[in-house]
Image 1 (tube, rainbow, N blue to C red):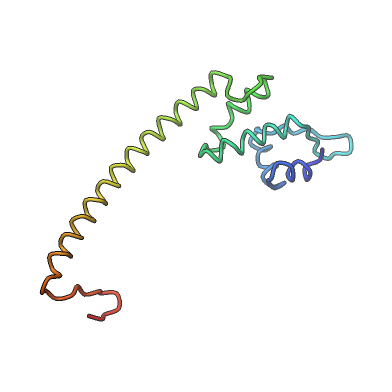
Image 2 (image 1 turned 135 degrees about the vertical axis):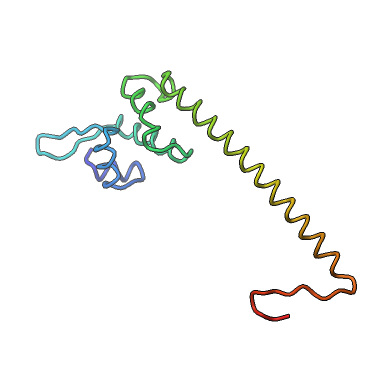
Length: 136
């Protein structure tokens, strides 16, 4: 198939496909007429790349999965290099979840403090001022 058909079937653009080709993720085969030529295997590579990118993998992190498929394995994650990328990404996600959990706890503590201060001022005290509009 030609580049336009592959792009359409993969849900991407021809520009993206050319970029992947320049990065060595997509083979650069040409037909006798000079047009790029692709097959179902290339579509499978693209779907693997897109799925991994949807999961947050950067383009270079998809390379071991692509290489695994190109080597003839039934799945892009059936090779040791792919499993290593999964492990690294899983550790990154665990660290990110830890940081987000900590930030959420800090925000919750600030909210609780602010609500407590706001409620202490209400019975008989002046209404809080909103500084955004300059109105009391």
